[in-house]
Image (cartoon, rainbow, N blue to C red; front, side, top):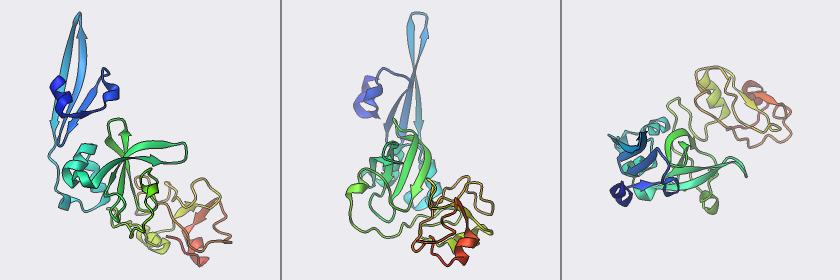
Length: 228
């Protein structure tokens, strides 16, 4: 295991705790131990990934097959991937990986295993990315180019979203803690259980509909207010 520590990346803070993950480019090694009487047996599970080329990623969801931070680096290059901290709120934060930071291709990986930067929990695309390092970036960024395989993209209007869904959409009003978020229970062609969508508004001050706890997209559109 000494040789692994020399050439592979691992969480040094977890040294002595098992399982222990070592990562290097497309290779990962998981080390576990088993105690048999007075003998300690070490087990090494080696995995070598067969990763796609950058051109093979057509939709944001395609990136979910990159299950380790090191895989992101192997596919897209060290210069295009960084480790960061994502803020859900001021007190609720998590370690994350950022692909193409501060660009119109920025995408955030939030990990189930944040200590080892592996197993994607979900991806975040578009809007103002609330990461520690992005908050230090003041330049204007063009609209994000990543699209969902369900047809959603950053900047699409509420009218376009409703048409794509094939029926009205319900989202939380301005007084909710989840203002603008489409309700997961919303029915239609889009599976909102698998893709979260948060709407922004441009001219909704004073809108009676937007003051409601839950807003129906048909009502919002007839109110001649602009959501996107």
